[in-house]
Image (cartoon, helix red, strand yellow):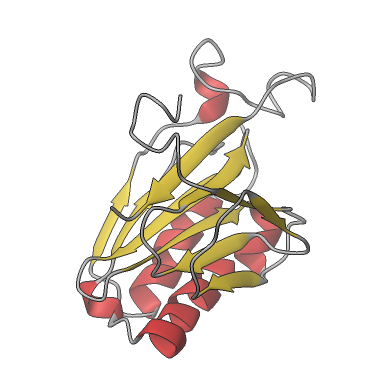
Length: 171
């Protein structure tokens, strides 16, 4: 798949994804694939690095600063959203790379939503972005549990499912 989108030669950086709010900061060039232990998100300003997050019902949150430029890819489900991981990522982008939240572009991936899940964490993520000053927020509005022929859903498939890989990189 990475071949088809021009990322085949780029190192793939992933997060262990423990449903926390820790973000890995990558501010130096990277030569090989790496998983960041204890993290649920990654931020970088480095070009030609692929950031990857695996999801099945949780939300992959893409955050792009086209001005700096800098990017972040965050895994946010019920617990990560409760722990304000997206707010933390936005704050870290501001602190480490000088990103202005008003200039950020945020995209939410498909994720589980009511009535298939008791909490609308996608709506909470949008609210966290607005509270942080983000103006350009795009939500796919798609529920993973509504279309298991197209998306993996841990809950709808009772734990016997795969994972989707969200990718983000700077050229």
